[in-house]
Image (cartoon, rainbow, N blue to C red; front, side, top):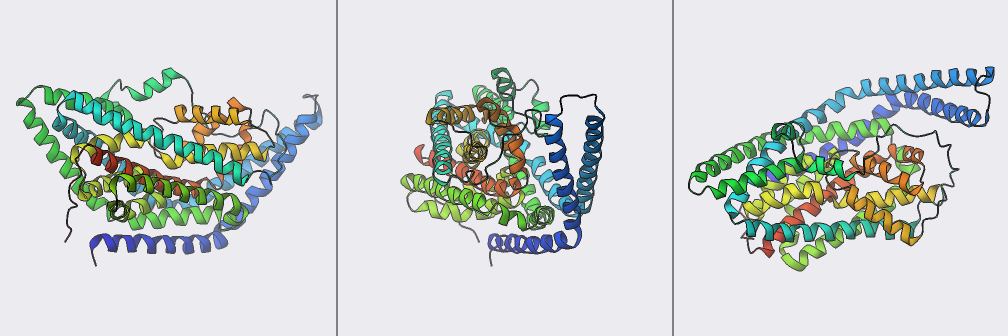
Length: 463
């Protein structure tokens, strides 16, 4: 059995074991704690309702209710802390793996992109490749957002919720994404290369790498030694990637066990309709992405999807597409994509082409509007789509990044922020699907641009 096949098998086995272990752990250890949290939540909601109708904030009843709310909030926080402590042994397995992956991503993006751009050499060629790349990214983003909007209107998963509008002072602790143009510019252009590397700011690293690569090509023969050094460093990092990927099944086991242990399988039953409709929508998006790839790559597209199944499983299990980045880079070059195209397109994709996250943003935002009975006209929905398209660019492919953007957008359309509480419990389950979809979208974009540029060679034969 090939090493790739064995890794796939180990990851699938880890997934199954993680679900089983998490279910048992939930019943035996976590369930009682979750019940206490649910009781405290219910009490807090009741108190908030009573506080909202009390006008005299100096009354004895008001002070007693505030005191009771504080004690209930403490009970909830203490039990959440206890759950986190009891799951620490599992989460640390995935944390180690993700930390090692993050250790690799920034230097890998820098070295491979510098080599890629320097090999392209001509600034006009860089612009041409960049133009084709952005054309695909914008098209994929629009399709993902629009498909999410159409399907959530077709399924109407929020209509059965019939939630009352909450008081304006109720909210969540999710930080809203800033919509200011200044913040966006600050997220794109680095003030320090080392700060960008330390914070894994992929887009800032890409900008510096583009300048560095073009300048390296511009100094002629003197730049050859830089290119050779960067190429050698990139290969060292890819070798490290091989070592780190051996830990993937262990990380998958820890991540899945922690999610199932904390939420229980009951969360799937409670939100079965919403989860099922979202994953059906992701399936349609996959079909569209693969069909678009087939139009350019023909039959080779199925070979490509087969090659990246390990990377997609890792992204699915860990709920972050970044975890799959080093593996995807290797598989694309084995597929026959040019190193310079892969090095250029893939890092950009991790900031500008998160197809699964795009679909989730419109799907989740309109789901919450439906749940509160808020009617949004077609024009308002298109406005939301365009806002999400702009505000989402540059978000990291990491857990809960989508929720941050949704929180910032909801206020613009008078959708209660408190509705995000509906999504918090199931967000890890949704994040798995959208992270895997992000990987598929970026892989397809890179392969298609390679084909458009005439840089797609024969696949590398594995022993």
